[in-house]
Length: 382
Image 1 (cartoon, rainbow, N blue to C red):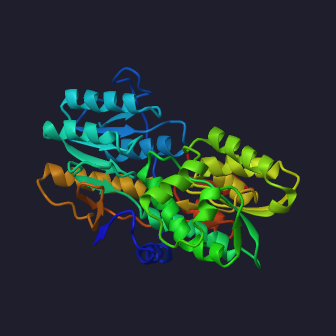
Image 2 (spheres, rainbow, N blue to C red; image 1 turned 120 degrees about the vertical axis):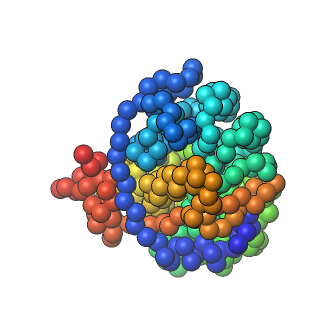
């Protein structure tokens, strides 16, 4: 089965309907490996794996690092600090170390193609992690969730909680440089658009999205135009500034009960706090993803409505199986589909999702292996 930006909603909803829980582990130590990087783990072992993560500024990635440290001991782990030049330096450093496999969660999905090509020229296998590296035939594997299904699940929550017509919808998205942001919004639009067209929702903060409200399937360029107007760049501070500008421009009649498509947990909390500070906003339905501790607390406290749990333990376990298969010259058994990156159909995994709301938050948290709830407070598992 092949997928691209026009992935059908049907497959997304299948994943949404069959979501499953996955636990998460813990681990330890890091040390410096290259200039301009936050940290790296202990020296390479037989696995000879290098891992490049995008930033520590988002809650998700330090949690993913712990999973990598446990599943792939000895891997060198570097952070790009939200900078494509640092990412390039990281990859070149790993190439110089002589690693056999590089796992990259790209800061810029297109810019990372040059790094992939450089690694490929040295005979290094490249695994694209969570975000698909675009426009190169040299990505060997892609480990991911169904990103279209994530957006569809977020949108479905808003639709399920809408009442009557004329509900105030505020749209926010990730970064233009991240292919996943397009997929998330594509999935969300496929669910929201019919309800925008029939008057259930009124878009209050995107003139571009409003002009396309009768367009069921958006082209890549149309998606880019909308995302360009509502991008948070995955940054909570940017999300706050944009939300403040949106609310300052909106009239009291465009507030009241607000339905907020927020792209992930960190931006969701920032946007939610901004909306809650506006006295004309009487109720907020807000989405998220990543299952972060702070947002789980917000959900229990009634401040954030939902999150989509994409367990990094599952993705990291898939990476481990791929690395083991490469070492044994075998085909990874976790590969179940392909995603097109503009140059090739990349062999890919497709991990399950879990939808978390206040109704199932406590039980999901306590069974996650990551956090526990005691007296209404979320704490990491020790």
